[in-house]
Image (cartoon, rainbow, N blue to C red; front, side, top):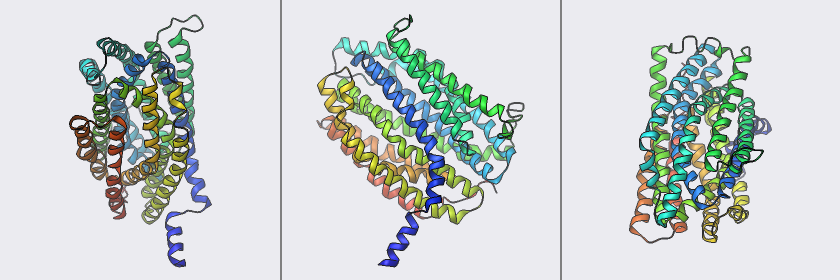
Length: 466
């Protein structure tokens, strides 16, 4: 028994240096994401103070933009696997090639995203508008359209800002993206206060003011991250000449990156589309469901930073170990990283559950919507350790370039399990929103089992730079 306990301890618990190294990487990401999510919550509350229709309109557009954001994340993440491994190998040329590939990918995704939103924005918005008076539905639709047209201007600076942030994090520099993100969210918060309500002589622009503040903050974030990268050429030698021959990437490496990044791009796109479809299914329970989901997801995002930051840390740490050809150490540390992520989220979930009733009271909406939002937050809190486990498994698989497996693990699973379950519950039962939401989250347990056996094989641990 004693030897068994020691083996479990050695497998799942690291020493002080291990946790220091993990938190050195995870904390700046956690702080940046935390401030971003917190200010995003304040942003949401400011719009929510305008009323249920403006809040719901903005929520619908943010759900659609979420797909774009994850397309950028997926497209850059696959390339970032190579960035981390080239950096671990000490290959500056390799990092430069991956940077170029990220810029090209970001611009192409941005162009495609704008084209889709311009051409099909109105019918996509209407998919979420059900069960309400004709006036409230049309009012929500117009608020959504007004918000969307302004937000389009911020998509390109957002995409390029993510290129610099992703490259910096993959090369071990997590503080600068944090500073850029923190500065951006405070610009956004200040701009919201001035432009939504018309302070300091500015016109009261409502939801358009919220969108304009967000667009300005995207440019600020890009300027800080790009400015630091180009000024510190001694620290970032890969940036020297990066734009001079932007389209020069060795053919073999380019093909490798496309092969590895396409499944991630498709995965994030299809996964985000699945999440948007889930919300659309929930929206069949009425506009109150859309408003409650907006409130709960805004609050939940603040708490989700714990496992999101740990996922980034897992990808960076394991990627650098694999690039340095420390295969056995990467396998050993993957278990410790997963256990640490779950432990953090047990504590975070407890706090989230205890405070679930406080946040919905801030919004200028009905008691019914507040009650629904509180229930949704509590359900999410209960499942927080489960989310942490699946997130850690996903980033472990991804660190070694097993993007085909992550595609099956994430988006295929969502479309095979989550979407059919939510669709069936929405269309063929009369279950209320909270019961529907709980049953859909319960399917995440199946994903845990599948992911555990995928990681346990160890086939994900491979060096892509050789």
